Length: 342
Image (cartoon, rainbow, N blue to C red):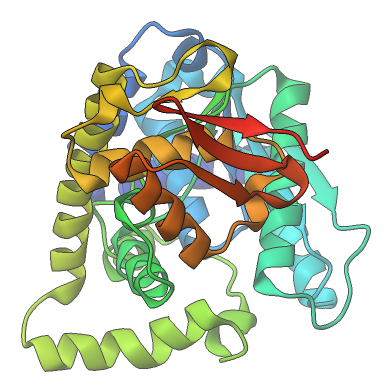
């Protein structure tokens, strides 16, 4: 197809998709963010674009619903190089879509790709590249195609490892990550609804066959657990999980605000126990977790070690507990501070 005809075809498909998924169906928190006049909102927008249904729907939604942003819209495709010719076909498809829509595309390939790479390794490589692409574009806003079905899968995965409110509130529609913000406007839509809207618009997308295998934990949750869960619930459990995620996020923000109001962090990296006295255990837990995150090398503290240290903080009991490379956590004089290893 000639470039002019190809562009016209994609513009028509994008308009049909936008009619099926109007701007009002996107997550309200993301819509509110897009209206702000912050540096991130006004700067370049980067879209993670795999070529699959979710990321293609996201790209079309941004391209149609924010036409004035097209000139600063950049798609980013990361070729994991784990699926041979199929991965190469995904890259070619992404190039053709972006060329037709006039969207700048930034492509990267995983130099250290290897057979049998874990889900976590692939994810870390992808986000490292996305960060590199954002830096190159001078962007602070990263748009991701997570949808309502992803919420249920993530919640079940994190419940399996005992996550608290911060973990169970993921994936968030608007998530601050250091100087960046991650945006997920499709969280109110199920995967089936997204696919139906694309098909109605005559849009084809690339399918990743690894999503149908059971080698990854998320795939097993998606293929085996969620259908059984839905059937056992006798109702829309995915929508229920999405609502629960919204409520958990509100609770998580309330805990963060409570900790901030207590102002327990003092100069010199100390944690004031007096300012946390009488607070619920969840608030003290959150403050202790924040304190530990500030201690470089303290990642090795076991879960039981954390609980023991939390008990000591609540009781105000003099304590000296190893933090591994970070030295020791010491409670003395109503304060928690770090003591370097001798």
